[in-house]
Image (tube, rainbow, N blue to C red; front, side, top):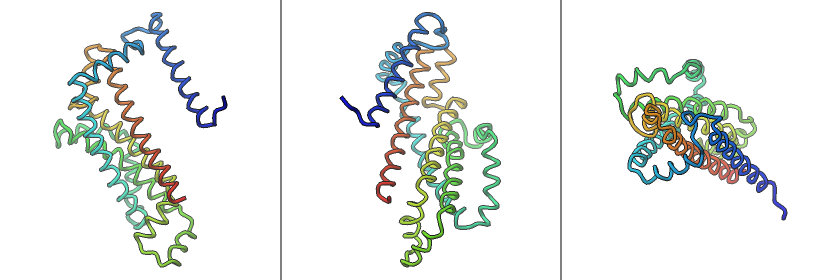
Length: 253
C-alpha cells in the first residue's frame, strides 16, 4: 500500500507520539522517574476521563474558555486596529512602536500586581493582561506586513479606482497574508498563555487555578490531567488558525 506525503507525515507524527508516551510509561513504571514529578501516561488518561465527568473540571474549563474567548477577540480587534493605524500614520507608528517593543521585551507578566490592585482578583485582571500580551505582536506584524507590500499592488488598485476598503480587503490583506497569519498565531498563543498564567498566579479561577491547587496538594495526576486539557485547547485554537489561513490563501491566491 502506498501513502501520499501528507499521510506519511501524519503517520510519522502518530508513531512519535506513541513511542514518546510508551517511553514515559516505562520510565515511570521502572521507578527511574519519581511519581511525584511525573505520573504514568495511562494513569493520567484515566484521571482525565474521571475529571471530564466532574463538576470541578467542567466549571474550570468553562471559566477558562470564556476568558480565552474574550481575550482572543479583544486581542484581534485591538491588535488589528492598532496595526492598521501604524500602517496609515507613520508619525504615530514612530512615536508608539518603540515603546511597545520596549514594553514587550520586558516580562510584562510582572505587571499583574498593578492590575490586581485596580481590577481586583477576577476575570477582569486575567483578560486585561492577556489582551496586553496578545495584541502587541498582532499590531506589529500587521504593520510590517502591510508596509512591506510591493508598490505595484497599490498601483494596480489605484488604476482600477479601488476604494479604501476595497484596497485594504481585496489587495493589501491578501498580499500580506503570510505575515498577518504569523502575527495572529503569535498573538493568540500569547493571549492563551496569559490567561493560564494569570489564573495560576492570581488564583482567580479556571484551569490555571485548578493546576495551582493540585500542585500544592501534590496531586500529580490531577496536575497533568488539567495540563492535558489546556494543551487540547491550544491545539484546537492552532488548528482553527491553520484552517482559516488555508482558506484565506485559497480564496485570494
